[in-house]
Image: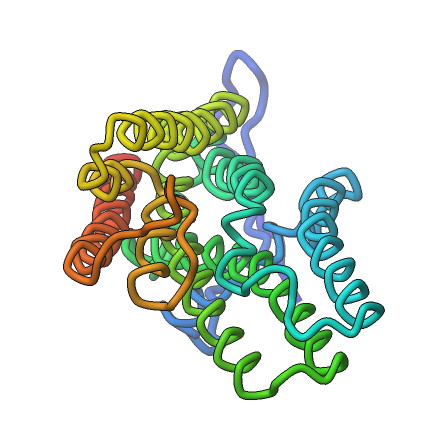
Length: 304
């Protein structure tokens, strides 16, 4: 039981001063360390990406976008079953490319939510006052948003796969296509998560972060698509593949068309060759690594 003692000091202009001993004791329980703190930050960030554990208002947009991603897949499955089609209307690797606007909106809404509030309310140094370090914070946030994006993009592929099996389509072909689609959206999730977090970490203002992420993802795709169309009109087919390096979604398109047997969305339907595709892979992985490095450097400065 806490004891209370008081020590009377000489009177001052404001009256007597007392010091109370209320029996504070140090913590003697188990110390779970960095790994537990990192895992907790990851799980809480992942839950927050879908509004879990937060207000109802915070759940509306991510859950709505999740439904919007899955509904077209369910409709395609229903059509395939009803018409007894021999194949799905859309390849697994093409679905995320078609739904890129929804994916970009999700990244724009959740990347600032993940990091901007910590910057705005200056709580980042509090994380680093515990066993957690800068790299732990960055890894947890990066992994959480990438996982949330993978759930968003892989769920409709699962709907397509289950529907294809119910429609009694070829099991081997559907399983191969599903696996290729998962590889594609996994790479997309890492790339988009890294870009979204880097952009959002620049400003503590969530509104500015949302606008900046949308601008980077949509303007880059629009500019690249326009330049590729111009190159095709001018019969500069060799330049189409290299122009695709400058937009995140065309990067993923180029990788999957070169190595995953996907049909390219590039003008003319001709994606990069195997050699060019290797450059796409290296460029994509380098961009993901650069995003991680920039985030780490940013939070080292903030945590000082």
